[in-house]
Image 1 (cartoon, rainbow, N blue to C red):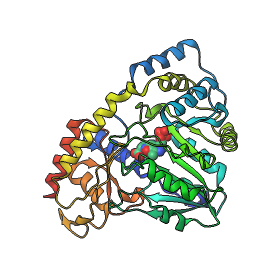
Image 2: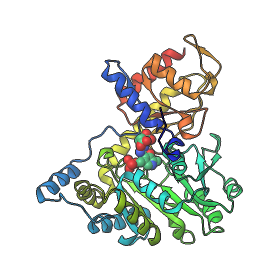
Image 3: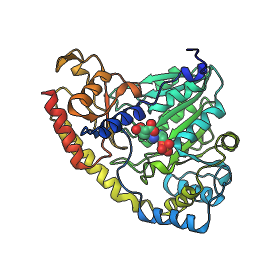
Image 4: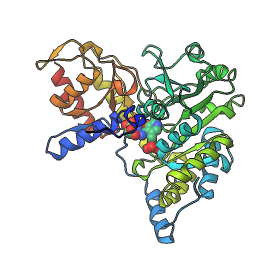
Length: 395
Ligand code: PMP
Ligand code: GLU
């Protein structure tokens, strides 16, 4: 059949996180008892005060298009939140509210990137960064990191990767998929490089900011000498367990915010009005209101650490944030398990789904072929059952 799809589209792949969770869902629907540890989706209900705010918004008649960048009231609340939690100074005209952090990130990339521009992305990276960059016909320049270095880049690696074509640097802290959290000093060291290259922009994805277990989260935009180079991305999906409500936002220099507004005005008009009203209430609240979820994630993280220790051959770091563990499973490569040779992380993840009925995501989705991502945004009961099954099929 004649292929009429654009080259741009054919150049990107499906999201492996979404693909794996769809597969798990399909198997479940067919009656298989699959435990889904693939998707980064909290299993809590959003807090009641947020649900009440959404119901009230419907009753009060917020049914119509909002300003493209979001209600002014919401953008004011976001500015207050960014100051309260992150010590960042933004004005409402620097804020754009979008349909999830995903759209917020894509808006930024579409605003900045020309074909052949280079974008530096430390690996392991969140699954969509690389594909979004490719969709913009730009070149991802991936910097590998090591487990020994807590999956963080060293400033000299960053400087070595910079060329005259470098336009943007993208990273997440706390990091999906590794759970690493950059310290204040580590970010300062990276900022020292960026300040030498004032034309390079930095997209700082902070969607897991509240899900931090030991170190405190720091925003790289806090440093005045590079503040104007930073686009701070955040959203409500993870912290408030509101993945389906689709609210994300940026704080950015005015020229970027204006351009995102221009793109969004043509693409989606605005984010959902009811969800925006609820976001106003969510972000006004003291972050203590969601402390119970963070405590629960920490308990689950500790449980995962206890259980994974018992699996021979698996190496791992202690995650300090987000709700993933990213163990190295290359010990199993070349080994025969249940009559099949495991060649790589894709095979290993497939094997766990087949034989243990536990869904995970291969590290290849995140630019690391030796690891596997396991989400612990699931109940303790499911986590215990999943690790018991994994252990059983690996003995
Ligand atoms: N960035 C990271 C690091 C994520 O894990 C996610 C989760 N999907 C997103 C962005 C996108 O989140 P949202 O649901 O707000 O689109
Ligand atoms: N961020 C989540 C994850 O990494 C949700 C899936 C997605 O948006 O790709 O699993």
